[in-house]
Amino acid sequence: SRMADLSALLPVEAQITKNVKRTRDMFQANHGGRISDVDVARKMKLSIKIQNEYAVVKDLPQPQTPAMAAAEKKAEEDKTKASSKRNPSSSKPPVPILSADGDLVAKAHLKSQAIMQIHKDQLERQGPSKEKANEKSGSGMDLQLFKPAGAASGGAVIVRGKGPPTLRPEWHAPWKLMRVISGHLGWVRCIDIEPGNEWFVTGAADRTLKIWDLASGELKLTLTGHISPVRGIAISDRHPYMFTVGEDKLVKCWDLETNKVIRHY
Image (cartoon, rainbow, N blue to C red; front, side):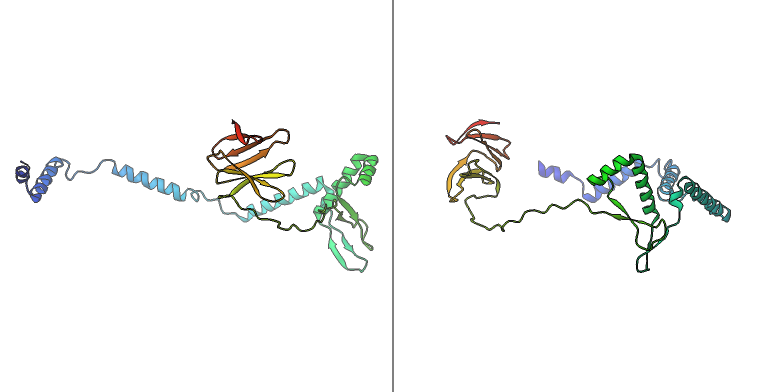
């Protein structure tokens, strides 16, 4: 029956011709017609493209004329004059400072003079008692007024005083490697020393806890209980308990007298 069905099928070329005729009959009425709203879609696409690419430079600023440049320059000058009237000390030109050798050291910067004036105003507001207290204690701004020999009147510079003394660590003999202990089969992730300094515990990625003798470095005991790497150890200094944490999301409390887990968290 299957062979009969296959023999009843038309050849491939005949099926293609039949499908082409069906397609032509289906779209014969719309043949040669124009797709609606194509112009609207084209205009919308063009407007979106223009907006994305030329929106920044669509509205350019007007070219600056000489009259506009002169007006801006005059406004800046007026602004500078107004600020100098409000703070006359900052607008005072710097005085050249001469050293004892007669060489020109430097011109006092406007910012330095402003800081000096602010420091003077603060001292005046604080009063003489506060000023003496600052001098004795060394608190306040760490600035000092310095006037070189041969400097003109009013010519002074601000010299930064010495800061607080730097604490230096105490010297000790260089550390030396005493012993290398091996026993874990994975990365050692944590360690803790018993409060009596007799033994210490290490935890590693091999899911074990090992207790070592601190003096000799010999392995005393191996504890198993975690199913994932051990990440932290804490030995109690009041009770014979040890707490361990691992990647298995468990906190275990060990009784060091029986070497067993007595509680899970």
